[in-house]
Amino acid sequence: MRLSSIIIAIIVCIGIAGFIFRNEIKDAQTLSSPEIKIDTPTKVIKAVSVLVQKSTEQEVTNGILLRGQTSAFKSVQVKAKTSGSVISQPIRKGTFVEKGELLCELEVGTKTAALAEAKAKLAEADTNNKASANLVKKGFATETQAIGRQATLEAAIAGVDRAQTNLDNTKIIAPFNGLLESDTAELGDFMQTGASCGTVLALNPIKLVGYATETQVSRIKVGTTAGAKLINGDEVVGKVSFISRSADPLTRTFLVETTVANKDLAIREGSTADIYIALAGVKAHLLPQSSLTLSGAGELGVRIAEDSKAKFAPIQIIRDSEEGVWVTGLPQSVDIIVVGQEYVTDNSNIKISYKGAQQ
Image 1 (cartoon, rainbow, N blue to C red):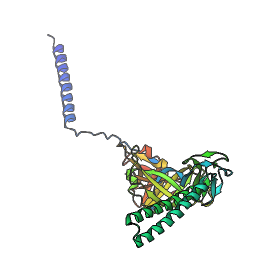
Image 2: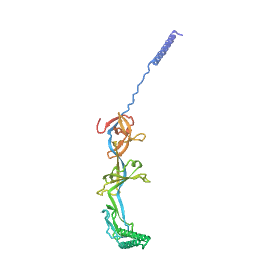
Image 3: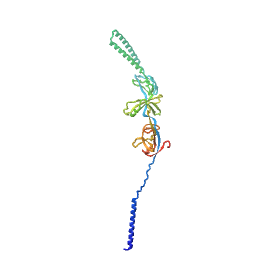
């Protein structure tokens, strides 16, 4: 072997050994160097913009709303108590009549004669009774005969009363002040006992009739102030005058009547009425109905703003009004989210703008 070949081989071996040695040093340095950490950017949650309304408790009159209608204070069908033909001109419906005013008059017929006959029998019975009493005193008649004559006298008195009443009943009169709801009987009609002469309504005062549930009726008292809004927009005020002790068997509700003045008779019977019965005053918040929302569990409430966080607060509605709803269950002063409440949950970050002013 040539010397030059040996030298070249030695040089190649030295080069390979050096390359390997350098790589081992680099690997050792890499393993001994400290760990390098790469920081990842933190995710930033943006605040939701909401509109907030400041609300403070106010004194509000609580109450119960009943759906009902107006009803005449009294309504009577005036009926004949004897029979006979009508000899009076009819009075047309809508006419105001006063107590004692003649509505229908029937022909007398034989009733006058019957009264005269009854009076004659009374006079005879009275004479016989006096004579019998004198005979008893003288000993010419027994006590039994005297008792019989006394009984005959009393029967004669009853006969006169009966005949007089039958005659008086030919005149049918109004039992109270009111309006005729129907025409009275026509001239020439023959009326049997019990036939209707006409219907009279007493509309002053007038009643407002509604029905309360089992939970409502326990909170209503006789004498409580009550108001009503009629279908034509008129508003009236009165007092609760009657509360039923017996529930309707079908609806399980209780009759509640309110009496109100109706001097001009402007309120008609049977008109629809929204009856509002006032209860003790309470503190409540007046909120727009649109601010109400539901929790995840389906509970009714509102979202409030506290320390730039959204919170859910349950509420109870006590009544509606044209301006909004009156609710209880909130603190005395509170910030209510009125716009954007549907886009936040509990502890959501919020960016607050106040309704009516920038703060």
